[in-house]
Image (cartoon, rainbow, N blue to C red; front, side, top):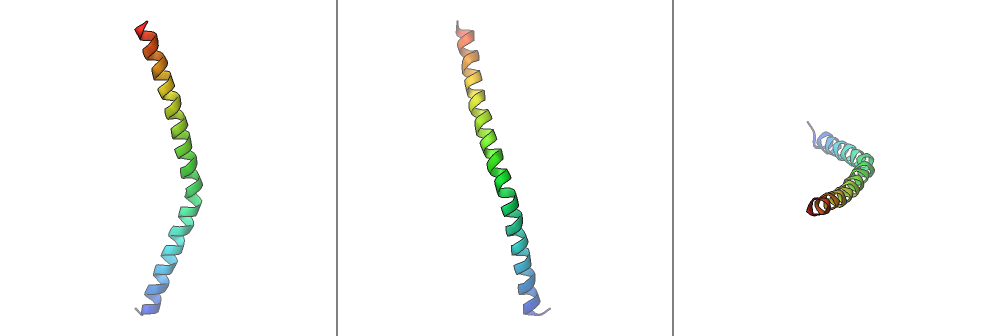
Length: 55
């Protein structure tokens, strides 16, 4: 195999990885935001349950 075909294969693989990363990046941000929101809501729910049990 020549050096050109190795370099071409590596560039193609890097390009594919970059394209997949760009496609999945917004989904990861949405997932992170949803997790943070649900975690915050869960903390509030647990606090309300704890306060209800103390009374």
